[in-house]
Length: 280
Image (cartoon, rainbow, N blue to C red; front, side):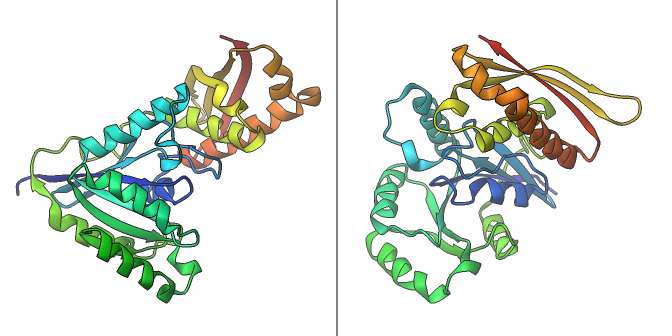
């Protein structure tokens, strides 16, 4: 049986549920979930294999800063467009609770310039009356040519199988990009670093989390099955150190404990995480 594959970019605003969907499709946590803007900064790939078909999903940064010229946000924007250019189909995810037609229209105008098939995916559909989105679908249909409209709840696994069935109709004969047992292009170090970044986003505020670079300096599977990890939190300004550490080290302790808990859950083993704040 010949191999088939399809590359899909998942786009949309921050908190539309893109990372939740990728994790659900893959069956593992490969992309962190956080309510803060642009939790996903890197381009993260999730892979789902169905028989001889390989579906490659690009989890992209949010649309929120698509026109920004800020240095950090410029990199985020490059990663977003890289995924769109690489893909064959675009899943445009919309939070059904926060529908803003003007924003949707503006984003679709940009996406239509790429000349690729677009699926509109209404996420969190379990939280609203389905009839509420019918006028939106009608309006989009009037203004744009859309391949499919899909209703899902990524968190509660509703409509995901139907989405996969539809996507599988678009696969093409081509060699798989990933082996059968690969679910992401990211390694374990990247994923554990992302867990710590997620914890930093949770406990620190404003722009500070985006000015911290996490570097792994130790990753070891111990003989008893535990995992030992050492990471440095690199900062460009030493005045941030007191904020990260907190009073009597309480803040850094909370960051470490939350990250450690998430890593243990993902890798199904007891984790010993050590963090150190250093200047770059």
